[in-house]
Every structure is written in C-alpha cells, then in structure tokens.
Image 1 (cartoon, rainbow, N blue to C red):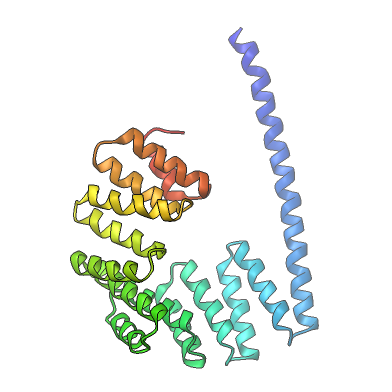
Image 2 (image 1 turned 120 degrees about the vertical axis):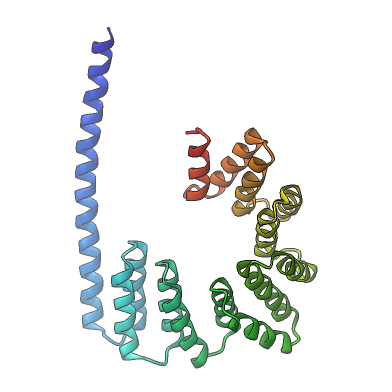
Length: 265
C-alpha cells in the first residue's frame, strides 16, 4: 500500500521538475530577448538617459549588479555631472554590500548637487562605518535649523554612536529625533536595537510596541519584537511576531531564518 501511494507522488515530482525546467528555459529566453532589445535601443539612441536607466534597472531587477554598475558607468561617460546617475551608482554599490564605493559615488552626487536626501544617506553610511564624518554632516544639518534637518541630524548622530558602541548616548539622540517626529520608524528600530544590545529586552519591547502601533505594517518592528521576546523566554509569542513580519514582507530573510531556527516551517 505504501509503495503504491508513493509512486504517484514520485511521478508528480518528476513532472514538476520537467515543467520547472521548461519554464526556466522559457524565462531565460525571454530575459535574453529583453536584454538584447534594451541594448539595441541604447545603441540606436545613445543619448537617451531614459533607455540607459531602463537597462540599469533591468540588470538590478535581475540582481546582476556587475552589469548594472557597468551600464551606469557607461551612462556617466556620456554625462559625468549627472548627480542622479551617481546616486544610482551609489545605490547599486550599497545593495551589493560595497559600502566604501557607495560612499564615494554618493559623495560625487552630493558635490554636484547637495540635495538633502544625498546628505542624509551619506551621513547614515558614514555612521554605519563608524566614521566621524557622520557627526560633521549631522552638525551641518543642525546649522540649517529646520525641523526635518534637525530630526535627521539627531538620527545620524544616534546611528553613529549605536554602531560605535555608545548605546546610551545613541538612545539619547534617538529620543530627540522621536520627540520631533513620532513617525520616525528607523529611530524606533535603532533605539530598540540599542536597548537589546544592553540586555534591556523589556524596555526594547515597550519601544517596539509603540512603533508597531504607530505603523502597523512596520515589518522590522515585528521582527525585533520576536528577537526580544525570545530573550525573555516567550518563544510562542516570538514566533507570532516573526510570522507577522513575514506576512507583511514575504521575502524577509531574517524572519524566515528565525522561524526555521525555532523549528517552524
């Protein structure tokens, strides 16, 4: 009886493999056609920035960062003073875990056009590298004396001290940031991480509970709630938080890994 039950299953698995193989072949062929069409279009209209950006995005969507960066560099050869292209290049490097080159590219973008978003991102990158340039950028933003700049400056300083290991000082700056804008979700996250690193898990849970109340779809908030609840021995509750994070972001790798570690499929 067992053998007769397994045989149909094995057949279905075999058919599924063939279907997946055929589907992958078709998808690969379509992808090659799409790439060729974009390359031909760029060759035909070399001055079209829109086409070049579409090619870059195509490679990015395919997670082919080497080709995406090469396509961006080719576009920059046509227009080396285009801050948007330098910003795109910075994003590609950052997504490919190359922070040093990301910082260099973003510096070029900011020097060409010092947009607030470039400066904020640059400050955050420096902070994560524990580079004191982050503090200089934060002080520059504080001199502007605008609410948006001020809260961002406090966040950058908090991030710098968080990565540098001065958790209490970091928490103070995150509190200043949240006092100006209680919707600043990354400040909740980083404050909770600082408290987690200090072993103050219940305090971190309080912060994260507020965060997911303010923004009910804050996936990182639920993930870190799970981390904290695990530390307090509430494994069942932690599992529910990880599941919530995944329901919001199905590709949340860390949440998947946490559930797998806890034996949840």
